[in-house]
Length: 108
Image 1 (cartoon, rainbow, N blue to C red):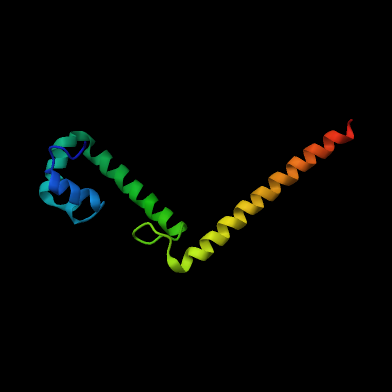
Image 2 (tube, rainbow, N blue to C red):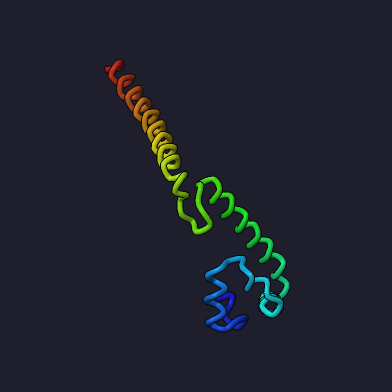
């Protein structure tokens, strides 16, 4: 919705396919977007930049490539770490449940 009236449909498809790409930095596009957003333009840019930083941090932490896919060399490490983490959480939960069950039996 934001881009309607700022660019045509063909340009919109290109822009949306490449977030933060060259089209986003085009002077004509920037001028039209500023006109559309008015005083909200600066806030909009700050929020978008923060979101892009967060997305980059997530990609790095999840060992994702630029397309959002798990890097093939990291795939095994990723799954091993995930399974170990889940296993640890499950073991802890099972211990807690067993402790609660057995402590309840003592009072019977």
